[in-house]
Image (tube, rainbow, N blue to C red):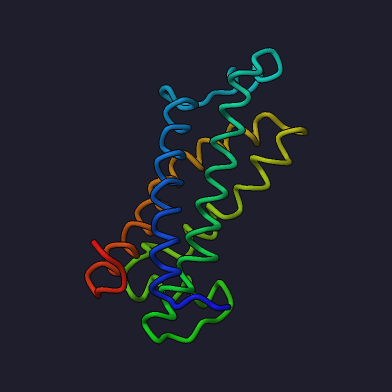
Length: 159
């Protein structure tokens, strides 16, 4: 059974609010004040910190997926916009003012593999990707909150 957009939106908003809270907590644990190559070199010796880095990486990717692949299409559907490939949906989001930059979103989207896979080969890549993701958190949270605010203003979801 397919859920009505408002029911689906309500669910996604609840999930995204929790994802944001968890991501921001993980961000505080990893970036005090930033993540350095020295931090990356210590990951194998400090499993507790490595778990915090892993939590940040996975929560970052999860929020990105939930907003871009789930919330955005359901919101566009509620607006009676045609749902298309992800890039088209991102372009609509930028045009409608909830996404500041498609290019920035796509750049942030590419960080996942660098944080999850490529660090095994290059700690410099991991360090750079994590610091870029740290900056990218604002983009993800801002886009999510803009869509949520729009949904509330239009009465798609309760305030």
